[in-house]
Amino acid sequence: MYLRFLTIFVFAAAFAISAVGQESPVDKTPQRSYLIGPGDEVTVKVLGESEFDFVATVDESGKLELPFVDTPVSAQCLTEPELRTEVTKLLVRYLKKPNINLRITDRKSRPPVSVYGEVRQQQQFVLTRRAYLLELLTVAGGESEKSGGIVTVFRTRPPMCTNAEQASAWKNVDGGIGAPSRDFSIASLRQGVEGSNPEILPGDVILVHKAAPVYITGEVVRPGELNIPEEGLLLTQAVAMSNGITREAKSKNITIRRRKANSPEPELIAVNYDQIKKGVQKDVLLKPFDIIVVDKAKKNIGDILMQTLIGLPGRIPIPL
Image (cartoon, rainbow, N blue to C red; front, side, top):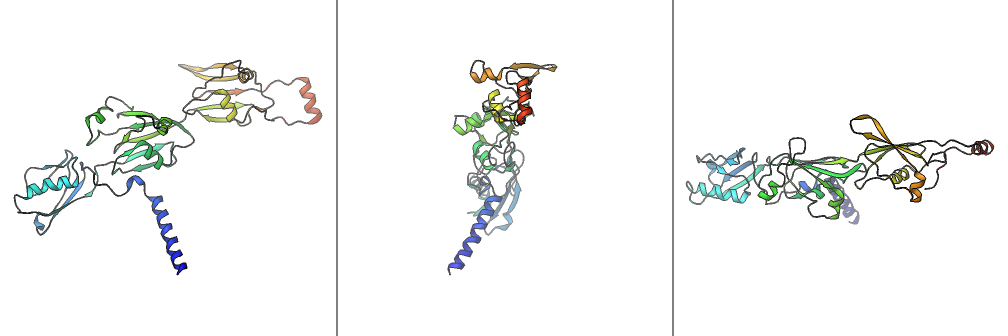
């Protein structure tokens, strides 16, 4: 008996895990507050009066054509019970006490929300209830390690069934693709800063931006590309992220090659890294696409003789 119970439990747990992996929490059973919109298919069955049964689609203007009346019903932004009441009022003309069953059998008025960019799982969600930015980012696995901490929400279609204040908040804000957009900080979002967690509407596109890069080359232990976080990146932080400079580094004269507007030639910024570590010189806040060049220092005669005599390796990290 115990073995049988254990087997059933294992199968049930496996099924539950599989279901969680395939279905988004945002896509679960629709709530009763679903509001009808253009493209939704409505199926009506009248108990005992099958000649009045019909299937119709809400048109682009939000109207629903009924086969037994000349004037269409305004269905947009109504719930199923509200539309059932309106259809019942019209059927009273023909039936004494119509008993109808009205259902939305195909929900096409809600285009999916797309979440892409620097998230762990780029996804699309069909919203059947109210959802907010933080929830959708969380369901998408959160931002990746390459995220720059900024999210842009593009509103690709006018809001449907919303108040005037919510609709006007996105007017005249061009996102560069012919649709309004707004930027939000992930840090502010997670801290609960007011206004940082907007409601997401059907058709919205959520883009998590990649962090702007800087590059560090030369006499560091791990040269390569680094990402600038939302709060910025200092030169000392970039060196630390590269595991420090080597024994042969020319730390008194590090060069930062910075893009110069309207010029193919970069701006060259000389930095004394030793003075920065001592607090004598101000640390440098790096800009996107900066190239940090750590040159090799010239060896003096003593160093050459020492390496010759005891064979010290050439690339030993110096503690920061």
